[in-house]
Length: 290
Image (cartoon, rainbow, N blue to C red; front, side, top):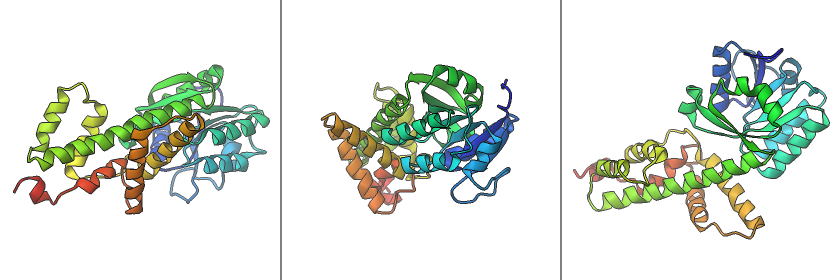
């Protein structure tokens, strides 16, 4: 399954997704070496990104933002070799992606831009989808490792292009959940059982895997984090900045971003991004018509 030395994999960043990817790699028989900004109790936890690079030639990075990505790459400088493949899975700004790729190239290593779609449950099941930008030959080298935590590995072009496509798909996701929350609020305000909205969506073209996943959580007011509001807002800001650079207006996303910002100001940033529907929540006796 693996080429020489590919049974040793580094995972940097042990958040909701990174931890579960590391678990899947271990279960597949890989020797996994990990590091996180705040120490974790994990097997083969090492003291720095440099130490991870010393023992693993394939390194998967799951950090939060561009600054963190560049900082991790800097900490590995002097330890990256021509044998290394550094895979960034964080959705970060295009400039940070470019800088990270250049730093790895200067060390003669290979870099893949590989953001993912899929939340906590998908990561647990090894069912993420990776959007990959970079050299196809490099992707082919590490594809067996990526497939351990993914149901699909899609090659989408050059470094940076995969990240842009991830950002624009998150535009659709965020805006859809905002409209879904509004639809639920209007349904309830008119005294209609929310389960009837679920039934209607199941037989309507606007229904989707996303609406089927998020509507029950919105109905129950369950905002356990699968993809945090903080992260979704970050990605929305990337999209808005990219649009400004092209002199484009994004009214739907801008409105949703304003709602997300208000929710973060209310202390909900660590909850699932569907918490933007919380402002419509009613006491249970009212929502159930008691």
